[in-house]
Image (tube, rainbow, N blue to C red; front, side):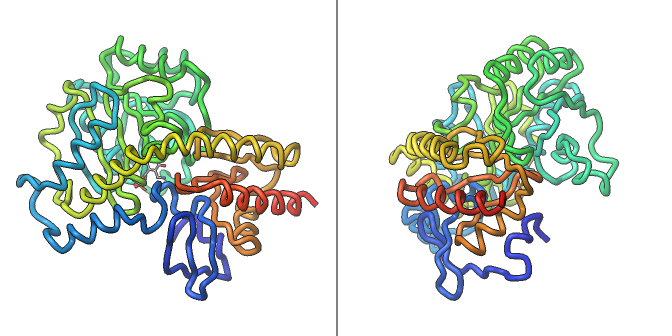
Length: 381
Ligand code: PMP
């Protein structure tokens, strides 16, 4: 059961094929993907470089234990480490975002010898016991308590409150550089820098959860690169394999030792790492992060001009965009899907979230703007 089932509601949209920025239903209808693939296909659907790499690897070697070196894993590892700031020199692969955060919190505890974890209000880090404990909303947590303990929440965006909470008992501060599920919340300038200073001073690990913000979406490979701040641990998943299930944790040397006693059977499997290598290489070589920055600017500017006073705010960075509506976002997402063949997801009750593949072009962006203009106008009447 998905949180997003309301989109098709009583009229499901059975999708069978994707290409670039579009998805196609079984009856051949074309839908613009403005977020249906949830940041998981930065290069668009059926990207040839990724499809070829995966098909070739499936035919060669599908699985072997991660203690044996395999070329696709070595290549993915090198590409991932090269894509991060200097300092994040080791990485570990896993299968999802929540698993990456779970590992990050374990590594931080083992490297510092501390247990306290500081997370932010309105955060989302995943649904396994540890990541869930660092997730804000009670709705996700209550039925499963008690979760992992010793988590303290501070208001997202307030650098001084965060700095006050960090002390010599702190193992980790975990933050999204821009919050996704919480409503596309962009923190004030200087926030990530303040988090960096405070954790460094206390000897705590700074974890940036880039599961939603990473892989070029905000204009650089990683959103923290926009602020010039390097964490001790960076977690990623979603778009890492352009749609294949894979996550990763990139760490500084002082964290890497604690990683030695952690593993998972499918860590760095040959097929998913072939996808990771093809995805990162293509993103970098074809300069899709820069395209995301310019298309993001275009969309944000045009949406502000088109929607004007009919919405509360258009915010975000690059192609991670939130439109704060005056009415419910579920209704707008349903209207977009059914009446305009545009698929987007809400982030919270009133925020419509745009997460198109980074390969969206201007004509497709204009289609999205027109559809949103029509939906918002009719919503207001
Ligand atoms: N962290 C963030 C910032 C996310 O947006 C998500 C998924 N929405 C997760 C972690 C969890 O990822 P997964 O669903 O792959 O476990």
